[in-house]
Length: 183
Image (cartoon, rainbow, N blue to C red):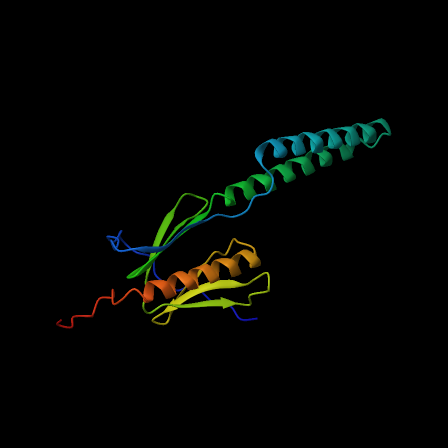
């Protein structure tokens, strides 16, 4: 099993965007299949089942079992709250002729920005069919892993769309800084 370790440094300050055409402007968000009304209904059902089972055990004299039925309902609630908190993560990927800009918002609200040169970046899709697949951008010996919260199929689709956007951006002409060369 091969995997990439993220080593691309975050930007210390926001850099002015390139004002040319944009080839990709995507927002990536994790999937959460259970919406709030369904979550409330599920928790009510779990609570009723736990309470009923606990009352049954009390009637047969096994009263020490009752707190464990409450504990399981609380643990299910905590697990869903953690899942919903993690669902707040976002990644925005913007590709133009000069840069690939990635803005990542963590579930805590902390934001990190990454900027990679479009002309030099290499896109890798590692273990594409596996659950632990990765979409990585690499340049200058460093790597940035994208879309880690998507399903493997979604990561593959995103990697194809990103590769297409990078190719179109590179074909628009020389937009990279010449590195001090005199024109």
